[in-house]
Image: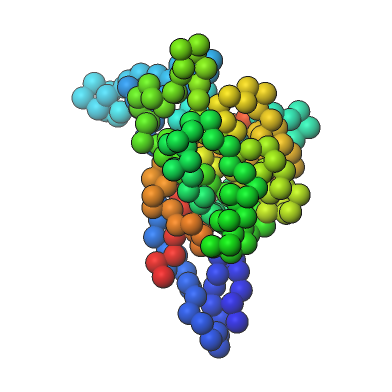
Length: 258
């Protein structure tokens, strides 16, 4: 038989099929950018990101930096309270809310043709025809190719009027994910851009829908070429601030070796 622990397959005695038995059957993939004030693109209006050396080994016997940043600097996750007063803050979530099965939807071609591309229900249904049903309460991660622009002005992709252009999920697609249970009470949307909705959606309609219940967002992800379309889990870390709206994050994918 095959049971699950935290959503990860564990083979029991007499199992007819090989399944991962422990952490040794997985490889870890880092899905986070390094936070570097010289490269980190900060969302317009968010606090400036700075690192100041406070002490050094030669002078003080130990090395320490003072980090000043918003809770959504660099690769980060957003808590449900980020857009909803009646939803949990970062410190009110369970550990299980931060460990989710993950699927990757590759929309690089569409995003290259149209920087405002909105992933549709049809896109997700086509994905399922190839890879199987998206698991309930999954992290559905968009690979737009935007991570290749990280650390440059092209990440913002401003037009002449100062409007940002980045791809994302359509509101209809996220409603479908919610209504069908694929984003249940627990789940996530992920992306290598600033936000799960296209940058032209200044009302953040996708985020407001996503953050209902215990769902979270994973934003400004990196190394998505190493995340398989299905079969991995993501573990989201970061500082848990009191009444936090989220946190700069270390995001790791557990990818089966087989």
